Image (cartoon, rainbow, N blue to C red; front, side):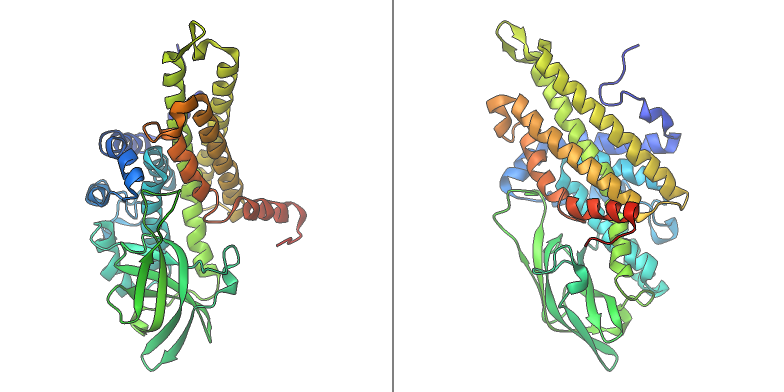
Length: 387
């Protein structure tokens, strides 16, 4: 019995019935609704906003949060499979879902008041309110503790000043989860689109994540009611807790991108005839294809075990760093090599590897660069902080 080329270890058999149903539903959505348009969206630097409602109807926004807030209440493995299938379409679509779910809905759920949860989460799950996450600053990058954005108390309000950079969904967003320094430590605020002094400027001329909205956010004496402050967390553990949630999903996403590249390379190598035989009949091509399958299999098992640990409440940030480092490196290398195997055809967006390779330049950088995650693992091994 032939093995599945994208699942040589039958990882799917380790999923339960509900998890398989989630994967199948999102795979159909990607095949039928994403793949037919995403190359053109990438060319046009356009995020397909027409898909937001369909993603919401499938329960993909805030998928792991409780049903009482209008969410699907899925487990962590199911959320990972959502990320994998969305990124098989495009990293930009998975980034949208990650930001909405892990970086915006999660902090409202984990750090917000019950009133905030009731106000925002059902609307966000339905795709009627879009969020963005304001942590990174132009000078800060991998050092969020160096933020300059600050908020000072003024009666029942806060006055917010500063800026944020590289913000996914920025110009789409109705609300921004903004982290700022205060006299009482770093705190989070829900900043609404209509607040005076708050503006977003879309970043143009990107060569990566072109089918995604990336923005800079500016705060000029923005008056934020204290009712919009997330009351249940202070310090960097707030935003870092959100990043752990998002990084978990990112460990799954690049697997989808790598599978898309392997799929296209397999099809192309069987059909392309050089020197009177298919490219797939050459030893060099088979060795490359086999190596990609090996790396994809290892990544699948890594993320699945990470998901099981998360569902058991045992996942540690270092484990997330290891998987993000491994799986992003796996995917970007496969995408680049698949582009090469396709030859001249590989440089056009009529084929997916160049698009995935360019997107993965962002994925391997955001939510902690590869170097940051290597140093997290190094710190765990040695007990010495080398940052």
